[in-house]
Length: 233
Length: 240
Image (cartoon, rainbow over all chains, first blue to last red):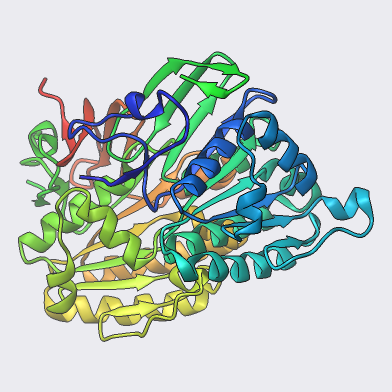
């Protein structure tokens, strides 16, 4: 039996139900969420992060597409306000974008800024972040939104190595990581490497959510919708 | 007849019966297993390893995608428990990736830490490992799972050199090896070179399995095809 954690997306547990009756995202395994642009990949991941926070599982969130302010307002719009989790320090954010647009970003114990074009710095901060979130709870979640932006700003193979190191760190510490990637935004080899380094692959195409691979179950898919409450399967 | 060993995959040995073999994987040969991501290559390797261990064949396992802890937990998903074999030293593991996670693991007699980015260190440890398993039995198995991470950390040429040296060692010692590779992780040229280095090739695409081996006895290529599923007992060939 493979222990799973709740995805936070209504209907996902049902879709991924295995023979022994459990469903969700296999705990301590890694997942790639990919698909064309604007199909709800970030929303899915945010729901995943939020569900964990509600269950007292801390989250290490690495944001490369949106600054912390945008992340907060997006979550608020989805009816999933994160302020209190920032305050109680169960949400740890590495913000690699705010530097670009806002000049001096806010820095606190659990809101850390880094630079999108400095993967070494990001990795150092991931190391600190993992330590921070798993001190209080060995069960935690982690999200990178997204690998696409990292690939745009850096040499591809370097990012593959960084992501591999990231997954190893999270797994070692007992966490469950998600990486988001926009389909076709890098060359085929990079895309294949991403797919081969994770345990589970979920594709969103705007209409169908497809489990292309997941520990313990075969390929499955189901239609989904993006509502004002987020993604519903 | 070409001597073979049991693959450990239900249905595979029956599928590969021919006029020159009794089915299974030709002994003392080396097989490339490849295919798209998530089609069961690692599961195949692990099944092959575990079956060997049950038959008292020692195994040299080079793991570069998963650290030893993940390897154990992946095997446990299928009820394959390897702790005993680690303890009694019939399983020799070279872990090329755990260091990347920041984990501090101590080397033991038969579990060695190395780094995917350091191919010469990997090679030294493979040399020592081969000697150790060879001393235990000249019927040993060898698994390298997989070339993917090696290709991400090194230039293609370097990986091919490492692979050639590795193959030479295993061949000299008479081991039966399997090496996993995810299709599309390198360019076409590298992929072609890779394929040319092996005696046998297995391709998995999630549904179909294709096994091809070159018989030195009559210089013919033998092909076998079937379909398979991944169950909670590992890969299982569909009945014809």
